[in-house]
Image (cartoon, rainbow, N blue to C red; front, side, top):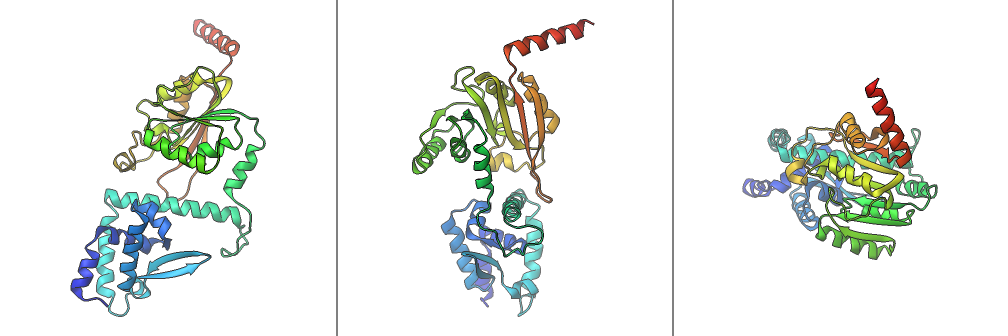
Length: 331
């Protein structure tokens, strides 16, 4: 056991306290902690090493991964750990109400969601959690669905670092990826080069003023990008402009939520959208056959993913519906 002075110095670091608080909620590995904390992996590893040397966390190896959890003495308050455990419990409860604490908790739920999706993809209700079925994965399933699609022209609007862009490139004839950040596009191009992807065109541009011609793509895709748009309605109108008649605008975004910390931490302009509000935005952009439904939801996770789509009507259909609307109005 460390001396009181050494222990206080160790726990005087906010990052180490955040790590300990997360580990009391869930056994985690370095990669998962890095994603939650937003700290470099080397820093997370260093903090874990210090906590391990102090006897506060335990390292466990399983299926090629290394996981960390609170040391048994800290968890069951044995071996003189009771005062420290009580102090940490009170500290963690208070920290959990802060903006940073809520952010950590939300990211932890994202880790749990990913784990659950992976488990559900690999195991059934009668399968032991340690027993995985080789070869099953969500990535493979999404790529298999791509075999059912024609070679569409796709615009990935707000593409970020290009992960979804590259997935779409597997089944699209061409993908035009647009983002406002040149630094982000540079990373995306590098990723495409490493993956040997050659059917992507990278463009810098704003969501509300896309650098694409009218009716130049079959599908316009927003994946967790619309809540970053200063004017979501204008962004959707631009998406409708660039798709061909009969083409689709597809949106993956967040349902309306109250996690205000995302404004500062992630740069979100909008705290998601209600189903009705998103549907109305699509209709106001001139799209028809609008659909909105849940894409992913998990108990305890403050974020629900919603999926929405709409079709750009042909000129003939659009004129017909305009006449019908005028006729109804005059009746």
